[in-house]
Length: 135
Image 1 (tube, rainbow, N blue to C red):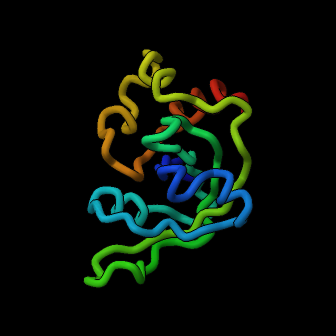
Image 2: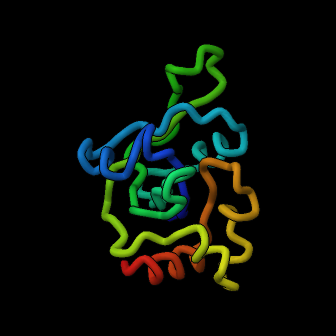
């Protein structure tokens, strides 16, 4: 199973809203690299839920429950979306500052490609982030 990180601005869609909803479609992605990452996602893959702009931290773990399909909000039909369901919150949110301070996480896509809204996470990075987050 592959691992991922997906960003959302909490004022648009937060972890708490995902927990309340149970699942959601991850729409509105308009970057080809992020879209290609979503195309690679398979049912059962897990992803960190990252609050961007406000908070700047990983707050939960979600799971792909529907693979890539067309995003109806894209009028040109170039982009798609996946569905995620909430799995569990992190006991302690992992801040961007903590990630940047970790020598073991210096190559993480979240830092290397900071504007990318959906990015891969290596197994090693996943284990480190879960440990920091208390899960």
